[in-house]
Image (cartoon, rainbow, N blue to C red; front, side, top):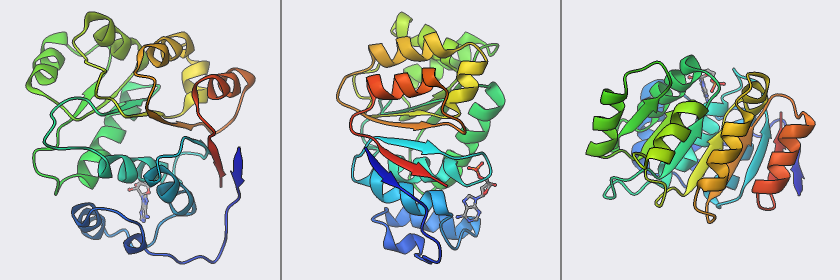
Amino acid sequence: MTDIADRDGDDESFQSFQLDQRILQSLTDLGYETPTPIQRLTIPLLLEGRDLIGQAQTGTGKTAAFALPLLNQVDIEHAAPQVLVLAPTRELALQVCEAMKGYGKHLKKLKILPVYGGQGMTTQLSALHRGVHVVVGTPGRLLDHLDRGTLKSDAIKALVLDEADEMLRMGFIEEVEKIMENLPPVRQTALFSATMPPRIAQIAKRFLKKPAEVRT
Ligand code: AMP
């Protein structure tokens, strides 16, 4: 495990990352000038294809830290789910989804779908059927779609667990594990958690490959 501590005083710009120009353009539109510490550390590692454990709170810019490098890897011409983000609540799923839409707004034809319990199945089914590249959702509903075969997992190349400790606290961890067991084995995984309870550490050990560890 590589342990990478935060480096202060490093005023790298987003331009120094190997990100698609269209993604960099959206950051300019949003007024993002400098990467936050978690972004500075995480973006190059995820662009390299590394698995990652990020210990970071909300408000540190962790959404862009995983969203930018993973959007960068999406093949827009292939309308199949390629990136899957698991979030503990519908609110967080929607928030991550909106943020990712903002970062990907210049990637024409990019489709990002939020999927959560309590929302009608019909809307989700027709959107999945039309084709999406990124799915952001809560574990129960995502597992449901995977079980029904309405969410095809064969093209998934990256999985993000956002607020893993919250998913544990809310009782979703078994669903998270079932999802991980059912995804293609060759994939990149990024696990974000503000705290690292034993159960989360155990999941990281079981499913992540030589993860880099990033703390801010
Ligand atoms: P997050 O921790 O991902 O929820 O992000 C917290 C807030 O910071 C959000 O409103 C983001 O839009 C904003 N943000 C994230 N990264 C940057 C950045 N590099 N520069 C300015 N604002 C940012």
